[in-house]
Image 1 (tube, protein in one colour):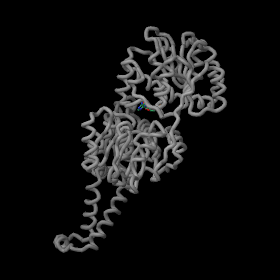
Image 2 (cartoon, helix red, strand yellow):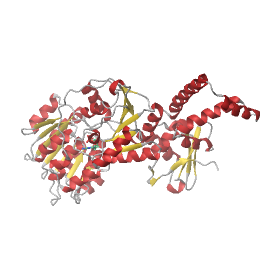
Image 3 (cartoon, rainbow, N blue to C red):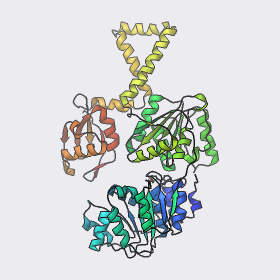
Image 4 (tube, rainbow, N blue to C red):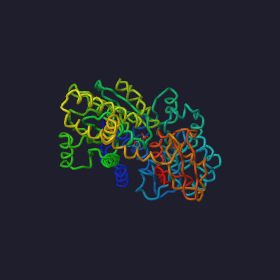
Length: 526
Ligand code: AMP
């Protein structure tokens, strides 16, 4: 598996700067291989799945080759779905942040065509579209292919599965023959090979070949999560399993810094390691991790390469790794020297396909688990504590404490109440989330519900259905379980079941409803 530093790929200053801002530390394996080939102008077949960095693998060379002086269509990227088209356009916009005034436009069905026509007139150089809508524009002559020099078929296998073959062929037939044709596909079935034979000239196949690696025999678990919930769930897992040392992997430097910050704010002893840090800084962090001053280390793959610590009891793939080999390297950091080890992987949406590839490559089984709720965490912590209490009773030597309890019982407290209160203090003082949990107790909601305050109301044209719609679509909880909604001029109260309150607060944070950015918090009874 060959990997390059972005500097070695001889890219423009503008792209290098953008890549740095995005926090990419190193080109992913598919990028290391595909970028140099695409830059030569030859036809390329890239075999890569979502999550490998494939968008930048074709996006970077395309951005490098666009003639910025000429404001005509130069590259067309075909995608199977509108979501992917939008995602690709966003990634290209981020990558071209320092390329002055480059015209990038996603065009897809479902969006008013007039708006797209108006945008196309502004001199777009890179068009990212679904085949149907691209054809539509060609027919209306609002998109002319005569000046197009590069065409990229992204997720070509998906497009064929969705029945776009004819559309793709019609589009390719209209693009001048002296073009460069690039095809990316996760799989290479017959139909794809036929397409490449017909439309590509002497294409170079680029794919990542892996060394066989053995996976340690440790418990491997994955959770299906929403991006915004990752930090919350990570904290729950650490609270629940209480690993001696934890190693958390993120795909970018930026994420490492953000996560370290979040964990420190929540009171965890965490620090980060990434390629931007000087050797001296890294050594300092590693010493802290080895001697237990911190028990959570957040790192990128590159930075973690040299780490050799025996007591890591849990590895977290906060981001699914971009390459199958990374997964094996990452989880190999735990379960060493006969110790117990666990590997947890957070999977968002379509990353599940990446996880399938990993399992196939590593010949391993990663099991799906339900995300633990706050009460699961409480339960585990409480039963652990009760075990400790039992042990302490067995050991005896308690007379000095019995004396205090006796004094309390004389003040008309029952020993049962005292014990329960002590248990509550003991398990909740350790639980860093509990202060927030307590905020739910006095919101003036119906039993089992929590009343939330949102700072938008009638003046912002908010109706009950907007609140329900927004909560349901952002959190995935059913609109039916949402309780009373009271809308006032400037704010709204909404009741949600207690077990969902935290999810709603995390997932709704910083969202907008009807164009107004919202603030949401537990309601104040007074
Ligand atoms: P893709 O495979 O194109 O869907 O990319 C998956 C994710 O990886 C996107 O969020 C990219 O921004 C990110 N990404 C792409 N290249 C790199 C890289 N070299 N290092 C870290 N993240 C990357």
